[in-house]
Image 1 (cartoon, one colour):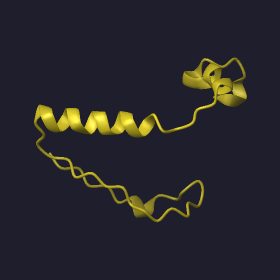
Image 2 (tube, one colour):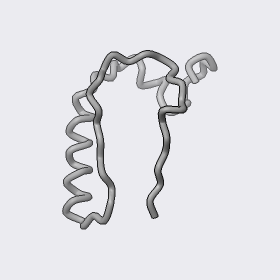
Image 3 (tube, rainbow, N blue to C red):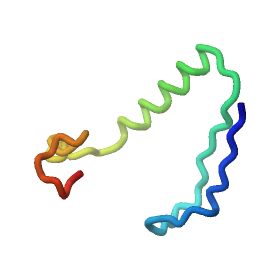
Image 4 (cartoon, rainbow, N blue to C red):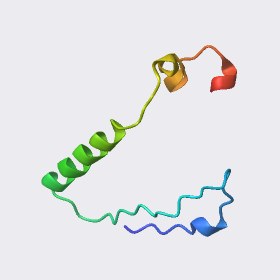
Amino acid sequence: MVVECNIDVLIPKRADCNTYLNEIYWGERNQHQIDTYQRECHERLRMINFPQELHGCCDRTCSDIRHR
């Protein structure tokens, strides 16, 4: 199954100056390719600086409804 979406009809909530397009072409993948992709994603996610004081607000566990 192939799903095509026309994202040009969507209105962005904010303007982003980043013109770099990050694309992945999905298709048939073997287990090695899946593992490689997962490892790459985790390595890049580790580079995000997520401050300790925000840990209590993640995953909808914060008691302040404005943070949800």
